[in-house]
Image (cartoon, rainbow, N blue to C red):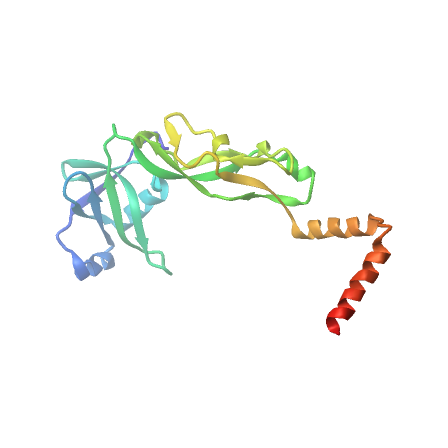
Length: 220
């Protein structure tokens, strides 16, 4: 999380419903702040808001200044146009800095896996985010996954292996698999073919005759 609090100015919003389309045309984005009290309708400069959201994501705190009033919030629901990416509407949630809140952190791979030297394949992730809980100022957007823990092709990383930053608790099931080694299909097929060519079964001929006999009986 950024050490410096992000700040943006906003104005109270009287316009609601379909009339907000005019606001968007004028470069203003409608938004709502939800919290312990009644929701507050606000409007913000679209370019300034876009820059703030790009930096804050959904884990960095934002101070929204509405006249002489300042609300500390997190961006929770960011609606954008499907093709153009234009901001349509933003929902903020007001936070109490002394009360822990639940959020999600993205899993980021770091390190190198020794398993890559053992076989042809890749490190695959079974999950991309984990649920976390922390005080608002301790929230993080990412948690590192040290893939060096996958030293062999049999090793698996679970949620229990993740190291959360100080002040952050991971709520996801500790036994859930996070990452493992997966052989490439081509490598598996090649190994199977080599195994078939290299194996000698003294009963192979008799097995083949028996199976042919079964086919003939079934066809009859």
